[in-house]
Amino acid sequence: MIDDTNAKIGGSDSRSEYSISEEYGEGQGKPETPCRIILIGYMGSGKTTVGRALAADLGVPFYDLDWYIENRMRKTVSQIFAERGEEGFRAIEHNMLHEVAEFENVVISCGGGTPCFFDNMEYINSKAETVYLKSNPEVLFKHLKMGKTVRPLLLDKTAEEVKEFIQQQLKQREVYYTQAKHTVDVTLLDDHDKIKNTVAKLKEAVGLNR
Image 1 (cartoon, rainbow, N blue to C red):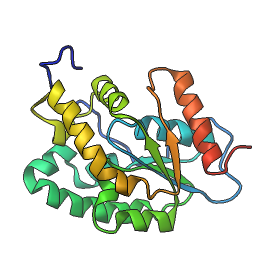
Image 2: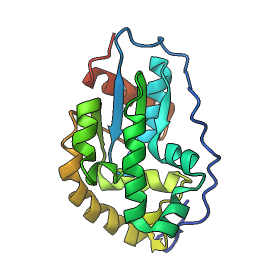
Image 3: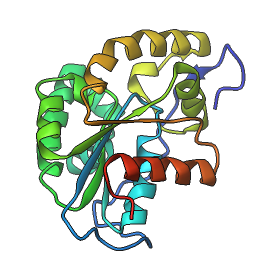
């Protein structure tokens, strides 16, 4: 966590290896008609948190694209960035996206940059109900402070540098994010009720409220 404005976001990735086995929740069971929901948005927008909760509610598997890549490559995203650079990572990400987007009855969360490369945004719009989880820069910064995941693009930046980076890059990426079929505004997800409310808004947006 960032304790003051001079702290840096970095460190080692303490996340355990992600299992790509199906993670059924205790929700209402699988939807009657096949569904494929793909969440996009800037890093820290809550895609993994909300995606996992939505999948549990629907009783379908949840896949985080970054975790899927790590499982398939047997390396962390940070290691892939270090070894192959962003260009190399994006090529791998593109290929892995084409794998998971073929699964049915799933919720998938993409990395923050996924929609911005190749034809990824056009592709996922053709495959799924896409949802942009939209947050303002302050909420994004607070979520990144709360999280433990290493973000390669934020390594060795101070808190003030991170805030500036978020503002600039979000402006660049929103042209892709706003191509999603649906948009759900996300506030600070710091308790269970807020996550539950966001899931309800998301289900309503894609027509799954029953």
